[in-house]
Length: 287
Length: 272
Image 1 (cartoon, rainbow over the protein chains, first blue to last red):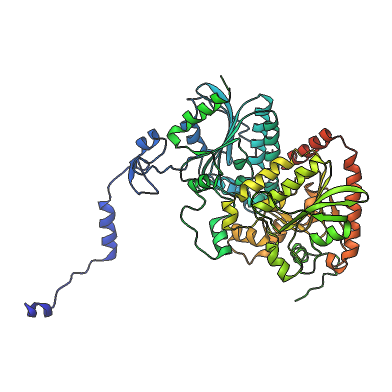
Image 2: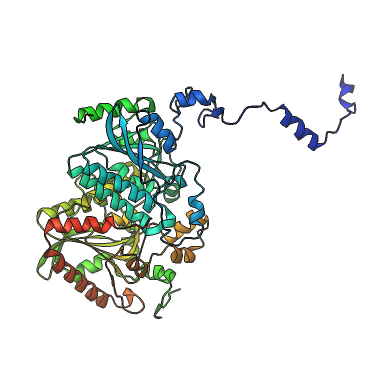
């Protein structure tokens, strides 16, 4: 037995090129887009099931980020959403190099970081802005500011309730000071909508940060949030660098904000339509 | 490395250096020099008193006013006391409380701004930094009294804007007003915080840039080399700007004033 330990073994050499080839051949042949992986629990979800569950993981309840088109589909009555001002474009006010190319690189159908228009919820007409974090991280530039402001003014003129689904990394740096001023412009329009006695519900989705949090996200008569959404003003790393400490995991999550008193309720995506419908009815809004 | 900025044309980055100069007159200096009978009022009536923001009442040329300043202080112990001019939510709430008080007693409001932005701290987030700033923007846009805001040093991010939704916005000649510091701008856009000088130029943050964009109403001239070369003279020029604006705004009907304020911000941004 002990002798066996010293027996010289023989090894075969396999070229790395052959190795790679054989591995790739063994890969299961799944058509792309049929399966999605949950970012949180890693379980594989059949794409059609995911869509039927409004892009919420059936295993762990993780709410996938939605682009504007998906959000409209899961929220409004079928085919009732009418988009306004789709083709509004920025002039690149700072002549920032490479900005035009960057604007074309969005991984979504949206033409800017927000889609604005009117849609129906159980037959009730509402003015709605849906931010799209797949377009330049949902950053707020002049077009985002202008589209949202026009929508609010449209809602005020037509006495419509207003809803904004927020999702944003904050200000659009490429537009500098103009980006900052959109916070004031939108807030002023909201204050007028409010003065007219009209209802504004903001719905915070993952992620809502920076200048959007410091303006219209926090100006709702009623502020709702999807579960586990990141919501904050300053970025996590900036805070960690300032205080030289690691922040707790739940910091700046929707549940944390609820506990601190900054959101009215956390509503799961599957219940969002029903919840908002109820709020509209309780405000005497009818179709 | 005390630099002399006596040349006539300073670069955008030199403007940043002047705006941040350790001897640059503070908001507190302007309050004491320009106004009479200033009384400071403390606290947001909810959590505490944020010393990054000073506020109270005073008079200027026999006009009673409310004065508010975000200020860094002028020596090390003050820097610490005033958190380097980075307010917490209670600072913005104190400012709003004093502004509502001004509205009630029909006093115009004058704000001095010098801040690197709202404080990015854990407590600030817990107490709703975003909500506090948002609420100021919302309320200031409809406040029924004239508001004049002056950027005296740095005016960075929403933390500055929270006191700058005003009828008249001025910048001292070498102050800067921007969405983010040049350091932040360089690190977000180029992942390279060392490119600050370039960022200062590209981000267009000088008084001259902002006047060109119609974001501000006017530039308050500084003595050659910067306000710190002659604070008394700077305060004199600033006082004249404030008094002229007050006299102009006081004549306006309040509804007209608020409509004009709305339209002023409504027009900011270009698109096609």
